[in-house]
Length: 312
Image (tube, rainbow, N blue to C red; front, side):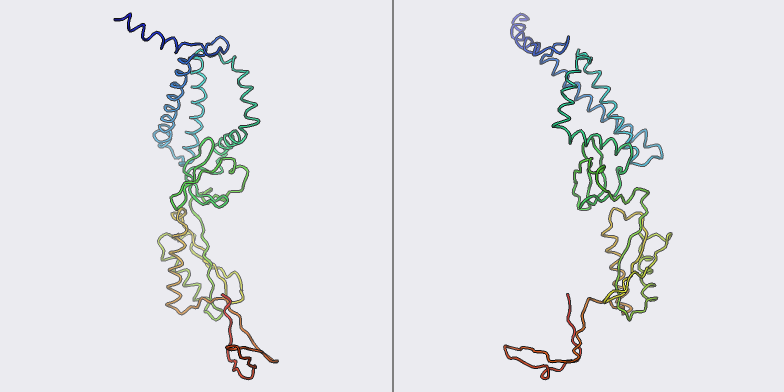
């Protein structure tokens, strides 16, 4: 029975141990390749588990913020992967000194065809070390506005308020300008522009704007809300309400909408006019030719009292 089984399995074992090519003193066979793949997959899985353990269990007990913990965990994982892969190569029987030629070929490949991948990887390391952005930050880059969820080896994942995840190459964070709303913390000042008519009571308007902000539970009282008169526009006095908040950083639109609703309600209750752009037409002298239903009319046939043209 054993001899029959051996006869059946012998071609399979011969296939697994077939010498594909030699790398120095090591013979590369299907079995060694399978062994290498399995160990590499195990290393990737184990490094990810160790990273999560370090971030959540060990560093979670410290005062480090989420971004710092994630940065330390990611760099530690890269280090484990590097050392582990070297050990796996030695275990398979591949001498590292024989990889010099292969390393040179890889270097040429990086120089020609893998420039973007290498650039994004190095940029990812710079991001983790310098931390211009970190996990949990609110950023704006190009037309992207969202929360940084993960910084990977090649790209960074940013989640918008529409629950859409955008994959941004790491090199963009190094080569382009970024607006980081939470670089120094979660406390941010929001600006709400408001225009009122010229005959409005400015002191009353200022008081109503501050009340609208103070009555919002998400507005901080220190620093307190303030109002600034910015410009004398053609049709309105342009003011700006400054309100600070630290828990509405990731829902700016909803926060600004709540304040605008509150401002509009107070203005209507106190008869404060929000003007729209308009142009007054004054006729001093001369004749104005008009047409109504295809019939020409002179200016003497028309009585002008208050003519305004809505520019909207």
